[in-house]
Length: 66
Image 1 (tube, rainbow, N blue to C red):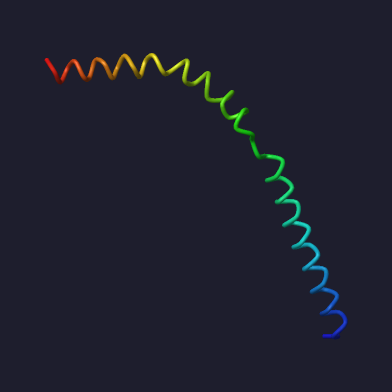
Image 2 (image 1 turned 180 degrees about the horizontal axis):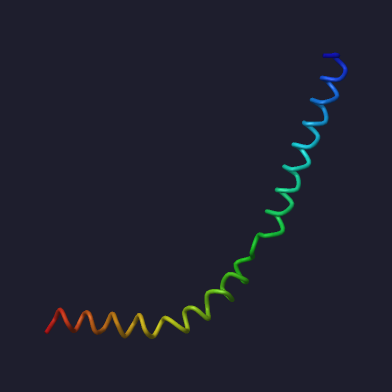
């Protein structure tokens, strides 16, 4: 093969690899969630399942004590 052809192919592959890595970093950077947003997502779950978990825990403790 021609040396220039090989170098051009290698440069093209390297450029594609760098483009993919930068795109991945950009996606990861945009997908980061702030702690405030995490709390907003967790609070409905706590409000929904918190009382049930507390009730079941109390029943289990009373079941072992009695």
